[in-house]
Length: 521
Image 1 (cartoon, rainbow, N blue to C red):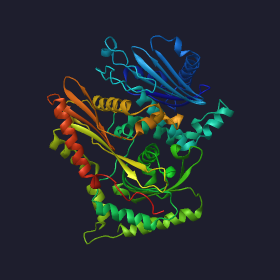
Image 2: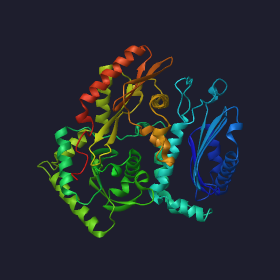
Image 3: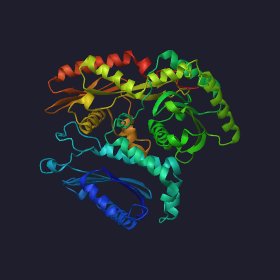
Image 4: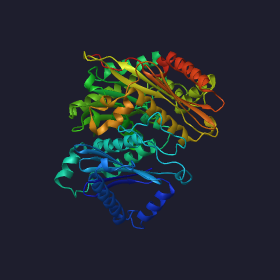
């Protein structure tokens, strides 16, 4: 997958090329021996070509296309364009003066026998679509990645960047973004490229640290009682959540996309953040794309990568000092200043969090696999959040997944498994969703699609190939995606899935944050 971001005037903003043979040729054409390592004229030429193509495609009337090679959806200043051929698919999302483009190449061995699958007008794969080769991502998922890149730019610049470009189309946005934002955008792409973290994007959810309910209750009470003036409080262990507190007011509760941006920032800036306390502006686009919240960040214990983030709407010295004092009290309550007779920290909280490391988490998940004869699974759980509003409650969506490697999957292809899950997720949404559920934010329609909450009776979908059976089940408040060896029948696989769901829900007080995730008022 290749990604390019440019302005409406064709000015380059960001580019990312993978190891694909076609993209390697592009990258070699862009590389230069100069200090910057890039041939700016070549990048500018590429962006000018994309910009010219978009202008021509937007002027093309979709109704005159009989082969489905071109699709164009236009909503005011938000347009989506898809160009398909036997060799590649080009996706472009246009947000006013910003163009976000992605290309994925079809493997050579599939070009003669398989054309790209066509999706309906919402970008969802029809249940009847043939998906025998599974060598490409769906249009909906590609659009989701482009929406995240757009959100990552707003995370740094807010939507004022659109106003700037509308007033001066030739303005160079790269100077405002800087290398840190480019690193964050690469982080989003790497997460989406069939990595173990793409479960967060596919299920529009976050991963939490498994803890005994009593330990999680103690952490929650400590934060709630000692933090004052914060809209949100996040206690993290690397990029997994230990505790999350937010307002009861429904319209102030964060969407998963905004939490993903925060986690991506902490992950890729941890070296700098661990050295000292920080006070930073962050724009959370789904919360408010026009302004920023202000984040106090400090590491409670740098060696274990346990950090505390406190978010406030107030940008003043008084609020910073309040958070600074709260941080000191929390360290004392967690006994992070105490040393035992052997010279080790005597913090029970730290010990409990460390025992739930990524390696321990993966081992726990593999234990569930062994019980139910599953090669791999991904589980989403929607936990209802108490709300002070009469129009309903929000949801804190969390997921369970684990590393897909040779030790757990044998000959399974990491890419193949994730793309199978992706197609199953869209099939289940195709059945449950309609166009009305995608309304509300035209700039993030793919995010809204993947966020859609599982409701009603169980829905089951599956894909079989020569080696494996892939199943997806969507029920009231949960989704499960599982991979079985090919000798497991569909009926047996469904039974295994149902039993696995029952086990995971029975253990959810340990596996998830199921309560105590809002302030008192």
